[in-house]
Length: 480
Image 1 (cartoon, one colour):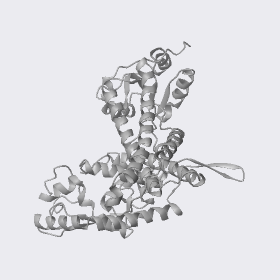
Image 2: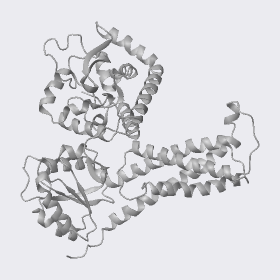
Image 3: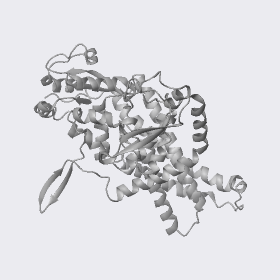
Image 4: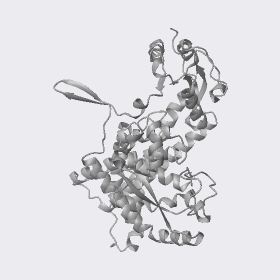
């Protein structure tokens, strides 16, 4: 096999420049948090105006020495978490969670070192300021780098050459999603399949590069760095042959599973008396996990209901003025273990909305909406009363969205594994919703995301979903 040709300069530069920029901005942010914290506590009037006693400024050299050590420690921690590797695709919500986690670890190291070192006394208030400011400044820097990287990709800089293996709907879905986001940084050269794809598919806009057996030679001669494999379960031998033929090539293979069990299962290895078992179906929401999730639901829902109470009253007043009928809309939904409960919403439609049609999906620009209802649906404020459902334990903040019994009966017969979503409490928002599957969308796709959430639940995943929900609400992404 011919040796792998050198990578294009733009690819090599992208793999080096972006991580270096990320390291440099992180270092500046960490150092800046030290200096700004010192200035706020000892050189400004900020704390005196808050009622704190004036203090004598300690030597700045001690803080400069501490900052030099912590820049190194923090960068090593971030490097250990692989945030400086090239070609990272990380959402800002994931980025924020990672910064809080590793920033807190860095602060604990700093506090421990300060406690053991008796040659200099550090202010506890400064420690708190450093912790808060470092998280904010590092996150702002990472967001800036991500924006810069997206702009360069849109301008054709630092792109990675990629190909797709496959020619059916699965391969088409890969192309559509990647083509929709040029900021991902992929230049898709074409697709490999034994025959051209259906001309009705958008994939047909790509070049058909020949059969799969030609892929390895093309990868080696063209410097392809990423191969997206969209093969069906019966074609796995082709995958093995392709990987074997590409031995020695600097290429990344990314396989898109088409089997529901592979997509959603969190496979674990369990051993009993030396005999290994693969656990294909589990529920991490047990024991302390369920206790932690319920505590978060109670605390957050209570705080939000209290904080939003003026807004809730004002919305109730507007709903009352917009049309005759109740302010709240109660509807039976199916929750955990298939148990029904009454979900609460602010009424956004006329009271006779389903008298003629019966149960149907709400849609965009629905004529049944009231004047205030369109605004409530666009901003998702009609969902706020569900905080009461969460407080009462009928729902959770995060989980699969609850459906009406009428639709549950339809879906359980048509959609594989549909009833598995009732293994946990339903939620105000969920993994499917923050990935764009809201309202009248493919129920099969939503089930894949719901089951992935159930099998892979973690406290961090819940926080990530909540952060992405807030971002979606602020950008007014409507649920139909």
